[in-house]
Image 1 (spheres, one colour):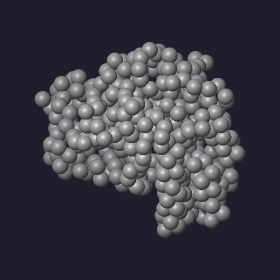
Image 2 (cartoon, rainbow, N blue to C red):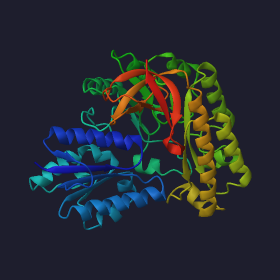
Image 3 (cartoon, rainbow, N blue to C red):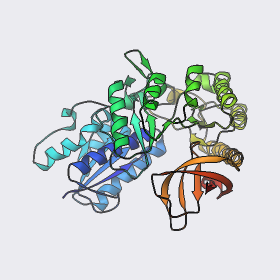
Image 4 (tube, rainbow, N blue to C red):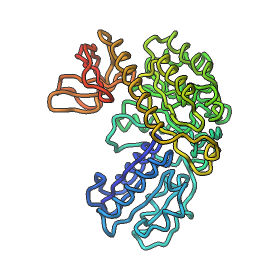
Length: 427
């Protein structure tokens, strides 16, 4: 039995695609081992969204080769598209497979093992040819409904490495959801690159979510990262459904109107804040998290202060902060007044501290309230999971089982910083 390990960097979409590949390899009779253990095949699913992502990806590729002499090393993901020639020139990389052919890595390796000479470019292109996840370390599974992006934000490399926007047929989506639920998962995460722009034969993103929610069963649905593209009240009404988790990761990127315009974002600050107001007016405890880029070219102290003000005003439960990173081939690469790295670091730390303060304040609003927690980890004396608002909960009860729902009352908060967690008691 051949042993295969996987390592995933970057976004939830990458993680879903890896989980699907893990399931397919498992069904084909391969032994799945943890990355770092001896393996005959190492698949590295890379990320290239920042310079740091590139650095991490290169390090992981080197580790895969050095720790498994003679093993087949397959590199895929966004870095495989962005630096294909460089990666193909590396002696210890066996194959470089771009995103559009990632779903065909299993037949590529099967051909290799039988002595067939097959170049990755000969593989079929299909960004949706992923089966339902059956084997995973997670209690939730993503469902890919869309890929690619047509926005072309000035800082972003994604349209180059993921391609133009394309939507998955609705029948494929619903079949994927049903199979995933049959495989035992209790939480479905709707994901893609720009899922709000879903459009297939006249059906919109709202239509997709409605049809997923209509599937029978005791499960919950969570919406992955979303662009704030001016959704109507029909979208906000979706969250009245008990299966749909009251949480959105709405990407703000900056609180400065000038910077948003230079980034070529599809909204302004007023439009974003109006979405937040509507959600919180309708659902007072609604959880909103976001992405922020600090140190974008020509970002002044005043621009950055606008961002801090916006973060404080929105009371995000979490802010994923990125220091702006020059991506070759993007418009922002050619912009003047690039911000020095030390200033980016200072600004990033300021956002982090404010985010932690917001998170603690938000968690405090749940004390005395109920949460329906999906158990993800079972420890010696307690279990951990996430409530419907996508906040971590620790429960002092080791008898509860993984991948089950339990209703708890929030009694306190433990930990600090990024490790803050609510304490729950079963009801």
